[in-house]
Length: 158
Image (tube, rainbow, N blue to C red):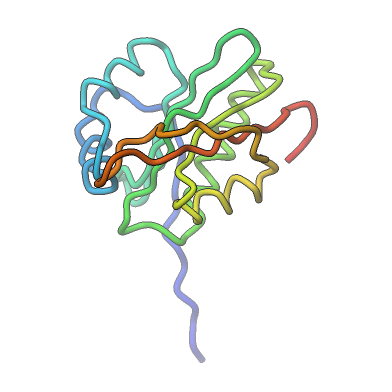
């Protein structure tokens, strides 16, 4: 009899200062133009909703959410490349959606590279839809890349 392997348990929790080095490392490995350690530190200090996903007591992903005036903005959501395709991005997104609802946010926004098909599929699966384009928003290897602006109303379930 073959026993299927079980995924190790994961937990999503609030980010703390001690997580910043690991979060910055994941960011550097994941993006050609990563956020700096200081940007993550500033997000924590500003009181943004910053969460990490831990797998086997090690940070495997993170998300940053800013909330103001009844709106929220997903600033960053990333899963370490070694831990992708396990549903961890969904778990991070679900956690920040819960936090946005708890803050009585009416609508949530984000920008995503149109070339990031995996992220777009995740956001659409959770009810986001495209509301605009931001021309030349992202730095790219050769010039700039547009951003797709996605939105989701938080008045109902997901």
